[in-house]
Structure formats: C-alpha cells, structure tokens
Image (cartoon, rainbow, N blue to C red; front, side, top):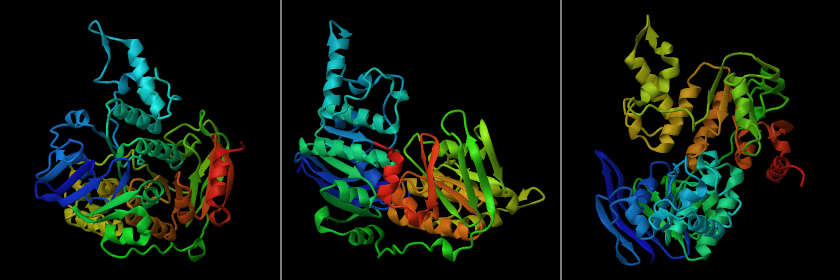
Length: 479
C-alpha cells in the first residue's frame, strides 16, 4: 500500500472535522475521495499533504510511519498536493515555477540552460510542451496553472499526488485534458488521490473510492462494482431523490423583463440579441472566452456598452459565486441580509430579531448547515459559504437575476437544492439568466439555452430542442 491513514481525528475548537477517518491508496491507481460539502474531504487531504497535523491517528507511507510537519517535508518524501487555491508564484515564469526550490546551480549561480531542460522534461512527461515555458504564470488560465502545479510535483519526484477539488476552477470543457494527464501519470505508477463530490467525474476517471460522511469513513470499494444511487446514499446517509424539476409549462412565462438588441462590449461580446421573460430560466453557455461572463457584466452595467441596446424591465442583481466575498468575521445573518437590511429596519434601526428570523428562513430554503443565524461565516464549509453567496442574491427584490455558475463546487445534493430553489424563484415571476459551462446542468435547469462562440450568439432555442452533443459541437464550431 502506497499511502494509508487510519483513525484520523481533527478538531477546530468545538467543531469536529474528522472522527476516525481512514483511507488506503495503492500505487498506480486513481482513488476518489467522495463526500458532501463539509464531510471532511479537504481536511483529510491537508493532513495527508502535511499542511496540518492530525489530533490522533496513524499515517503510513510505503508501510512506514509518515508524519510530515509541513508541505515541504511531505514533498521531500514524495507526496505532493494541488489544491483549489494556486500555490504558484504569479510573477515567475512557467519554468521557474516548475523548478522552484530545486533550481540547478553552476558555480553558485542558477544554471538557466539546465533549468529550462528540467522544466521541459517535466512538461514533456505531462505532454504539455504547448505551455509557453517563458510566460509569466499570471498570464495563464486556471487549467494551464494547474498543469504547471502538476509538472512541479513531477519535478519533485512525487509518488503520491493529492488533488483537492481540481475541477472547481475549470470549465466543463477543460476537464477532459486534465483527466488524460492524470491517467498517464497513474499509468506510470503515481498514486493519485482525487478529492471530489462529483460522481460523474469519479465514474469517468477513478479506479476505487472512499466515501466520508460527517468526518467518518462510511464505505470504500471499486468504482466498477458500485452504482450512482449507492454512492449518493452513502454520501447523504439516506436515499437521494433525483426527480427532475418541473418544466416551464407548469410555470407562467410572462412579459419580457430583459431585452438585448445587437448588444456588444469593447471586444469579448459582439452583437447579441436576446429576450428574457418573467418566469423563465435562460441558459447562457459556450467555451471559456466565448463571452458568457462579459455579457452578464454588460447587462449589469459594470462594463460599458459599446454597441447595440439593452432594456431592463426592473431592477437587476448579479452573483458570480467565485467573485462575491463572504465576510468571515461576520455572522450568517449579517452576510445573508446585507443587501436588504432596510426590510428589517424601522426608522433606520435594525431589528436583530427580524433579521435573524429571515436568515433562519433562508438558511432552511438553502439547506445551509449552520448552527444558528449568528454562527460566524468563517466556520462554515466551502459549500455552505457558496450557498450563502447565492442566498444573498436571491433575497434581493430584483426582477432579473444573473447567475454565473451558481452551483459550481457544490456536491450533488446541494446542486439539486439550488436547482429547485432557483426554479421556485422563477415560478414567482423573476427572470433568470444562468451562465454556465456544463451542458448537462443547463439542459436540466434551463427553459431556453443560448450558445455563444467568439462573442457572438450562435443559436438560441428551447432546452428540449438541444442535446448535449449538439451543444458541444456548436460551442467548438466547424472543424
């Protein structure tokens, strides 16, 4: 066994993150660590990578005691970690980042020829020689930065690679190349721990799995010998209802609330014409760089309109979960009700009781796991913080809501909850523009899907008239 953990406990004050968790990782396998948001996946990954110590438990690397006191010590022992937050130096080049801390020297000086040779070797092992070795990392996109981090792990001679939510910052279109890279590494004998809550990814990539629930290991086995329903039940502790949402025929589609006529920005968006109606969820998709986010910013007027016209039939609110900060020192109620404090105030005086009651109601709608409305936001899991961002948007009295990847990074049950909540908000008459990169999600959620390519609208039609292969082909364009 390459890497083992057993009886791992970890507490943060009164909160228990891990309670006897364990995992066994074999050489040359890709092992999925699954669980809902807050199950303890990231905590176990940080312990295995030396980012923090366990309170109790046993770690073994190649059947020998393993107790790294910091990530650098873990790397020296052959265990590397790539997390959702990049650890690269943005002002250094690709090749400088790959050899960082292991720079080849000659007569006391860094040898640039050997540095480039070593960096090119690592990139070649990943079949990533297309990465510009002399480019500053700050100029790269999330997928390319991730390849640089993996190349750096290879440069260190890592035998174990731990990837914590590696697809969180990637679009649906960028996961395929990452999976190909990981399969090549596993084929070369590297043991890979793939931390995720996306079952689609686990079935597509992984050999074996371990499921955590509330800090405990509840089951493990071969991916080929389990089912989606069994894994969902293990993650949730109960059967999960995957019933699709109601179709638009069961909601009232009313008047238009947002009209775009030939709308365009400086460069990324060119001449888009669309109409959003009351009670409608309109999906906006395309490859990264196609102009999804830029179009939302034009509608929000956070970027100037250079051509065409945009009419809005009411107030507009926007949320991009990755961009909207949660104030960790403030509690759940303050974060959630921040845009609508006037609703809970009289003569300028905030009613803490009314605010807490509203926060409690919205926490229930969002299935937000918080002990109380006065729990500090910094103590919530990453998934709970994302729900808090979305709730802060939905609580506003806007007639048009702009959602940018609102379910990204959430476990399956949480995504279902978000889909149903957004559907209920649409049923109240709000128009919702949902920008996303996952065709399957858009087909499940949206009434209409509009596809952009190179900043232009390629096609817009009811979701029932699209298929996932058609969406992918339209996004890629003619060969």
